[in-house]
Image (cartoon, rainbow, N blue to C red; front, side, top):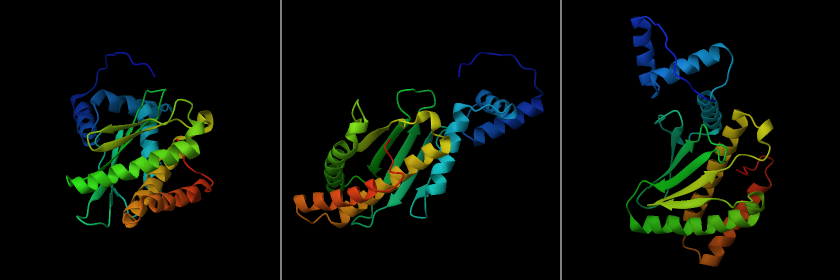
Length: 221
């Protein structure tokens, strides 16, 4: 959706109210006015699509997850407590790409801790997780599943579903939410069995992953 500069004559009181609302929504005056006008004429903006995705995702989450205030229109932070020594918190930072045609967004996974042992354990989990994803769903990603590591965070690109034309914002939110819940469960399963030998721990995780593969709406994103 292209944008151009237009001049509007508005009353000072309206502008003041718009500015206050825009500030509370972490957006700009022009962006908020664009959203209001688009909704009035029944047009869908990238911002509205992202809000719908976030809302669908939130509807899927249970009390286990703590959803933080949005840092911007395109970002969401979700926290999940881990029952393990030092009581760390798993943080999922979701960022959507409003104008990208290459990917839907990306998910950053990290611990809110500086403990070296925990960070090494998270690295161990993702070594197994990446192998499982590539083995079982890698065939759906001709360009490969994109993983990167930023400092002590793992970043997973979220691809558009193959049936993009028929995928609504609600469907996209449900897919992302299901993926986060599955990933969270797998991380906690890993830590609850972390004292097992490496081969046994991998087998436990693979067995759970195969169970997830059988669900009707397994998130291939």
